[in-house]
Length: 373
Ligand code: XIL
Image 1 (tube, rainbow, N blue to C red):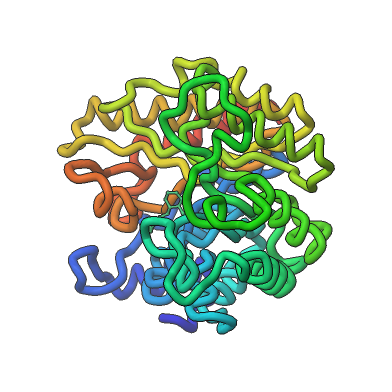
Image 2 (image 1 turned 30 degrees about the horizontal axis):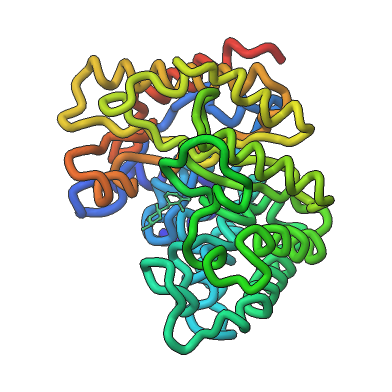
């Protein structure tokens, strides 16, 4: 199946072969799911999803559904520090290259996620964000420069936007802190000799030097509502970067949402106003990792609520011309980080585990259809 390069051909062959989601082989997407999101989104914004390397390699139906519906992709894990540089100075490109090749083959824009983060940082940091025993703080600037420069240079001209820094702001803060004071005290921030803010500025500068045409993003979660204190700190951070002449071009809103836990947030917290706070600075905004987890079992009422959230967020994004991309964190409920991370929750994505559309998909279609050209 790996040699099936045309999505249409793959669909036809799979339709003839059968298969199921129970491990008996690749699943078969319903052959016609039109109008596709990507056809509706054309000229409006990038519509995308995160891809996992295993199903991308093994499951032609997964590939076909992604190629059919989306014009943008991001690697769910393959371009993080640890996967890309598994040991000091040694890079592993196979998975990331394959994702880039898939995107290019299908005329997609490719987002890069993420150059630097306190998690999945391989041999540099422990899981708790402390330095590994054989790494010194004095080495961090050179490690940072080498990683950012090597990765961005390799994909120069191929990856259009990078999440340069992910999740740098601490959770649960009160008001009144400085930018430095708002930053998470872990990993790069904790040990970078020039300070908690400087590693961020350096990372953006090295990324820009390696690919001056790539759009560079700061990406975080919990910054999606107007009244969010964390959003205020994200705003202050990007304002400081801009004031310091650091090449930052956009902000990524992760959007891992949960109606059972947080109701309609951020739709009930002036989401358009939140978008404007960033776009009024001249920055682009991307919705980078949308999923809407449901406490299981997912009833019809919960799936309808989920549809409203997907539709409402996409409609608000389409209404602001500086919101230029809208990506879900995975294609389908069979390939989602939610189930392994939030006990009792799941069913977070617009397709079910057989790649059949859920109400959330119809909500996305409807938002795109309603948007002006
Ligand atoms: C998650 C992946 O989905 C998981 O497979 C992995 O085990 C951990 O990371 N915010 C981010 C993403 O920026 O990189 C995370 O992805 C989800 C939360």
